[in-house]
Length: 235
Image (cartoon, rainbow, N blue to C red):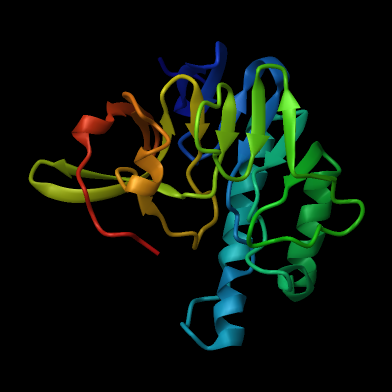
């Protein structure tokens, strides 16, 4: 079933949610928007460490996409599910324009920054609240999924990507993963990369059937994990 912004409507832990084509989650009842793994300033991190040359525009692209979502969905709360900044010094490297952009967004909705493994340092005061995880009714939002039963868990961390064969061509697309009890979001960051949705690190979290909500250009399509194929790690 499609809904706002051609998103796909589905249920997790009894709640009606929307997987949006931009790779974000919307919870209409709570007017809550969730994004995972922004990895802001990843490009500048690589430039500093001279490991790989990447254009240093990833933060602008990611914030532009987030701004467009907030303009359209008008959420009351925005939850960033960890690894929002690529490393401990990323905030210090933010250009003034991008820093001002975050401050403008934080003035429009309540931001909650979940701590991730890449960004143990909290963002500056005035950018929102910081938490290890938050409970919101039947759902709990955290950075990394916990092994074992976790009804209502919403997380990121793995950057899931679906590998598909379409008309004889191999394709890779970001995806949400869910079994109706837990949910893993795709990475929202422009340079975040991804891990195959069939990788054992992910598959062990779903002992029974699970589906990939595959992000296309304008829509989200639901596919059983059986329709996916193994492939190399991306990013």
